[in-house]
Amino acid sequence: MKKQILIFTILFLAISARTSVAQYADLHDFNCATEGCSPSPPTLMAQGRDGNLYSTTLSGPGTNGVGTAFRVTPGGVLTTLHVFNDAVTGRNPYGGLSLASDGNFYGTASEGGPNGWGTIFRMTPSGVVTVLHSFDFSGKAGRDPHIAPIQASNGSLYGGTDHSLFPYHMTLGGSFAVCPNAISDVAFSPLIQAADGYLYGTTSSGGALGYGSVFRLSLACAVKTIYSFDLFGSCHCTNPNGPLTQASDGNFYGTAQGGNNDGVVFKLTPSGGFTVLHNFDRPHGANPIGGLIVAPDGNLYGITSNGGTNDDGTIFRLTKTGQSFVVLHNFDGVHGGTPVSIMQHTNGTLYGLTQNGGAHGKGVFFSFKAGLPSFVALLTASGKAGQTVQILGTGLTGTTSVKFGSGSASFTVASNTYMTAIVPTTGTTGAVSVTTPTGIRVSNKIFKVIPSISSFSPTSGPVGTKVVIKGSGVTQTTKVTFGDVTASFVVNSATQVTATVPTAAITSKITITTPGGVATSVATFTVTNSLIGRCVVSNGKMTGYCVGVRSGICREAYDPADCPVGQSVTNVVLDQCAQSTFHVNGSRGCVP
Image (tube, rainbow, N blue to C red):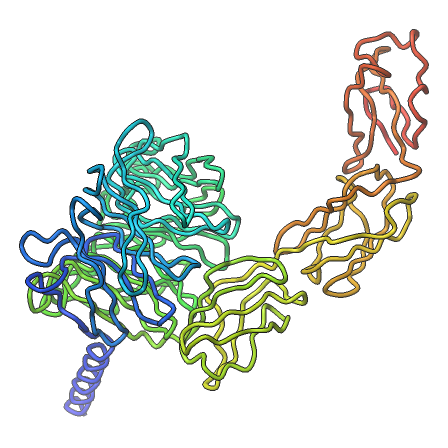
């Protein structure tokens, strides 16, 4: 019996080993002699409209090569698209590439270029490179850009430079501007745009305590530090060199490379609440540097650049609560070592780059099949009805339906890997689903349908008037206000809401709130029996002017003409301001 158990155990382990090997594939070994090599972090990989992956290498070809940009198929067929020239397009492109709405790729060279301090460039899918900006280190211009810029919802590119982070923004045409406030830290990872519209990023040093930070950047360049890492505090972690990712729960997830351990996986709320989900130990991975992927199964996937069975790095998985951590693959050096980047293709497979290992010792392009489903990726995460949204995927030819939440959309299939769809007036905030001949592909991100108000009728009336508000994206309306006064309402359709002018409303604009955002009318609704207000008295003297109510408390605004602050009550007529339903309670308050 023991012999049989031993045999079954050996067979199980053998099958498990074969399964693990089958999941991982070394698809291409970089060769410095003939092509680019030694990809270095952060090396962002971008999926193009053609379904191929695009990125950069730090060096090669040849001993004096200063880097390349390449295209590689999901099967591992690599084509060098551009060889960097130090004086023209720059050298050492650490950052990889990002895809923009024009179908082109954008990246940075960390040094060189016409002014010697790095460049921002655009590359077409065929490899034509145009330098859009050359850094010169003058004033607040920054230098040594290590990260690829990403396109934000306003259409502009946002990025930063190393050696005191100077955030910048730039149009696709190359109009460049530096944000006025520098962050005195070093950044090696690309920004992401979160559901709240802000851009978020990490710095590997600096922050309040000098061990790195997470910061927020508005599209108007306002900067705020969200969290500062602390070697000796509750975090016990430092150097968050990888990018953040945001899950459907609204929280951010990321990795920190150092500390008094071998790195951590963390969760961060938008308000700065920090939780360590996992502490690495070298036998199971060390120095997580490539950030995390939130996969369709809801789990987190990532890489460590060192540690594991062979100390060549690992691929790991864990839940968003930090449970069920498992090493999925141990790199062995022969088939890749020191992984620096990982991403998920819309075919469900994980792809990545290593800096070392492989046949030539200069890194590999690899894949890992974790049994994850195919999905569709959206190039924009929000929009109004009528807006065109670009969609990446696989097996799109023959698509029969596209839905934004519960609303059916019109669409155009351009190829098996790229299509566009128009946000419908009936669209709701939620996942986008694409029905293909082989199944339904669901977007890996929520799409926010932004509401709009086109008109309302009537344009004036007393309290209690029924106002018909027309627009789009209003199916999920959660709140209607006249000014700052909340009104009762009924959703009639995806394009119409009827609201009742509330008590205490004053002449103001109308606002509708949905999960997709807020819409405010251009025109003003006139409340014909608006209660202008009255003077407010405290201890026999004027203190304010009651002009409305918010949450049952009188809202006051000083009125020097009719209610001079500090003037004795005996010198004015209390009711010279229009009489209202409020009365003075003797202590500056107003009670309905």
